[in-house]
Image 1 (cartoon, rainbow, N blue to C red):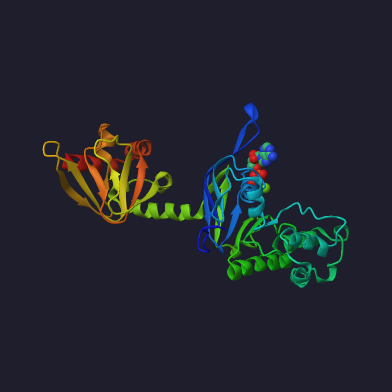
Image 2 (cartoon, helix red, strand yellow):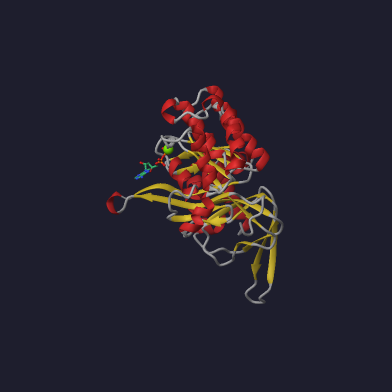
Length: 370
Ligand code: ADP
Ligand code: MG
C-alpha cells in the first residue's frame, strides 16, 4: 500500500451518505457519517435494527459502491475506485457475516481453505493453521464434517475461522456471536483481541451481544443512519462541564445544557490562524476552551493593525456581530494552539432566549466592548 504507514488510520469515513432505491422510493440509509478507526482497535457498533449498521459495514468491506462522501481503507479512497482496486483492497479484509454462506459440498476444513486460496496462500502452509484455528474454536472434532452435519453454532464457528484464516488487516463482523453459546463466543472474541494486539488487526463488530462488550476499545452507536461516536459523547460531556463552569449558562437546566453541548462544535486552530475576519458576516459564537487569541482591528486611516486585547481560556467572542446582525468589527487570530467551542447563530439565539444569565452577561459584555 503506497504511502500508508502502520500508525495511520485503517478506516476513515468522512461525510459518508448512502441511498437505496431511486426516484420517489429513494431513501437515505446513511447520513454524513464520520468514523476513524486505527490499527489494533476493536470497535463495537450497536444500534436498533434498520439503523444502517450492515449498510456501513458492507460499504467499508467494498461489497457496496460508495455513492457519496469519502471512505478510505488503508489510506486508499474507495469512492471512485476501479473494480480491480476494490478487489485488491478486499484481500486485506476478513468477513464474518450473519448468513454464513458455507459451501454445502465442502467440509469445514475445505470451506476455510477456500479463503486461503483466494489470497494465494500455499496449501502446505495453510493446513496446520486451518487445523489449529478450527481446534481453537472448538471444532477440532468436526474438521471434516460438512455443514449439513453441523449445528448453527458450529457453522458459525467455521464462518469465523474462514473470516480470520488469511490474517486480514481488517475484520468486519456482523453479529458474529449471535448463534454461539457463551464459551464459543468468548473463544471467538478472545481470538479477535489477540489479532488486534499482536498483529495490529483492526476489528469492527456489529453486535447486540452484551457478553462481548468488554473486548471493545470503543463502542459506537448507530441511530437512524447517524453514527453517535463515543468520542463525541465524551466531547459533549467535556463541553457540558465547560459550560457549567461559565456564568453564562448558570441557569440552564441540565437537559438544555446537554442540548446546547450537542450542538456545539469543537474546532482547533494553529497559531496565526484567523478565527474571525473583520468585515465578514457574523455567523458563529466562539468560546475558548484552550489557548489564547488576539483581537485586532485594522485602522482604515493608517492601514495599521491595532491589537485590542488578548482573550484566554474561558473567554468568548463573536457575540456582537450575531446580536446586531452586523459584519465582524474585529479580527480574531489564534495566538497559541487554540480550541474553540463554536455555536452557530440559530443555536446561539435559542440559548439567549432561554437563559436569563446568558442574556445579562451578554448585555454586560456588549456594554464593555462597544
Ligand atoms: P441494520 O443493519 O442496522 O439493521 P441496514 O443497514 O440493514 O440496518 O438498513 C438500513 C436501512 O436501509 C433500513 O431502512 C433498510 O430498510 C434499508 N435497506 C438496507 N438494505 C437495503 C436494500 N438492499 N434495498 C433497500 N433498502 C435497504
Ligand atoms: Mg444488519
